[in-house]
Length: 258
Picture 1 (spheres, rainbow, N blue to C red):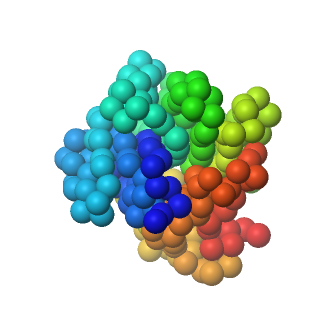
Picture 2: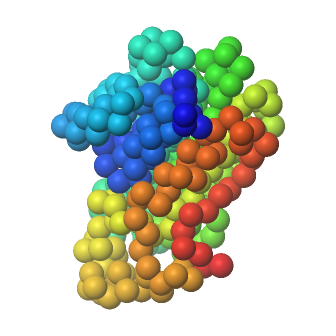
């Protein structure tokens, strides 16, 4: 018996990294999973892993920069499984040339695209998932935040968007039935393909090895975490026994900048 037996979880950006790790952990806890990504091959691979755990997996390609595609993905998830209990809004990262996101001469179009990727896409997924959760009188919404969701120091658009997730968490928590919880899970520096040390080094004016070492020094444990370390906390927040946890910002980050 798992803590998520009989539940259905939609996890955006679940072809790799934190999304994949959370999908596998929730499957181990008994949930059936909807996987989304722009890359079908990655989704099929993760779906195979989930089915190997004895759970069902529905891989759906989805461009999270497309409002209508997000809406269709939520609808298709409910149509396939008959319910939707958990939404883990994992999609995020950096779009475009990050050297154009760090100066006073900021690229306006890239600013808006990065806001959509990291904040607005999560709004649309949640907006379309909530009515189903209300109808079934159960729901768990989790936003994937960042160490920069709680402090400054990051790129302008990324930091603004991640701060926005916390604001959205707190606002939504007041406006949904008590059977639904809304929380943000914040990783720190985590070993995923989105953490491109060469790109970061370029923005910082240094080399990749130095950039990685500098980031390792930003948490108490002096290390980069693995995606699998986020899974158990995500599964706990999604579980029925976590009904009293809502409107919260919970970090799994090795003690990032405490």
